[in-house]
Amino acid sequence: MIKFYDMEAINMDSIDALCEASDKIIRSGNYVFGTEPFEEDFAEWNGNKHCIGVSSGTSALHMALLALGIGPGDEVITVSHTFRATVSAIRYCGATPVYVDIDPDTYCMDAKQISSKITNNTKAILPVHIYGNVCDMDAICRIANSHNIPVVEDCSQAHGSTLNKKKVGTFGKIGTFSFYPGKGLGALGDAGCIVTDDDDIAEHLKELRSWDSTTIGYNYRLSNLQAEFLRIKLKNYNNILKQKRSIAEIYNEHFTHCHTRKGVQHSYHIYPILVNDRNIVRKETNDKVATGIHYPIPVHKFHSHKTGVHLPVTERIANTQLSLPIYPGVNAMKVIDVLGQYA
Ligand SMILES: *Cc1c(COP(=O)(O)O)cnc(C)c1O
Image (cartoon, rainbow, N blue to C red):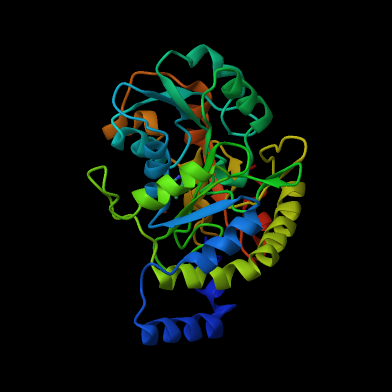
């Protein structure tokens, strides 16, 4: 039986360093307000001037939009093919999500559909680098710049994904990451961060995450323990990425797979295939290979976000998508053996 994900195995790689760090932090008596070492390492690794550690990927998105001054009456252009935190964050600000459909080849925001959705109320464009693939950032930033609208990249599934060797989170005004344990780079609990090259936004975000004095106030801080765990795991992350990319290469030879744009290096948080009769396929194979679905209900059809818009590509992918296990040590040939006949 092949597991969908092996959370424990990934942390076993650095078990000694993790235990040593937790021992040190427990004894230090210093549990918050000491996350700079990780923030500096992550900013450097990702190629940004600033990294602001926060409590989750969801709070990272909320804070990014707050820092841009987004509020009631504003519109944010985004996708429905995402984890629903992307859309919830827009609504926390009282703003309205405006959807564009995804590109049928990459499953990422279809840049061609953005212009027709821009109004005087559009205050941000929020693409999602879904599964670890990279959106068409050249086109998205070109459109955004021509209207003077900031881009916020949701990088929660794309740690280390690159376009022309530049990492995601460096193209827009702000990038947000989740370090939820199951994400590409995961903490041992909830965590997230925001990256930006803008000094003023970085300052504002540091105030926002910990009870700034001008607004109602938030506690969106990252704890020292998670920051230190992340600092340790970041050292091994390039190596994990390399292993996941070689597994993907094997899968790519056997499965009809999603495309990456020219110059893109995928990070394979998720390896999606499309199958008809997904429930039957899962029933026939789940005692041998555990698979996932990301996501069975697109956000615009999810009850608390339900709207009447029709997004044909998003809906088709949501109905047929199946996620294969992809992590260091997974038996790729066995997965191909069991699922190769379906896709
Ligand atoms: C996981 C995820 C989030 C939310 O991150 P949390 O750390 O779970 O709050 C946001 N956006 C996307 C695309 C995600 O995959």
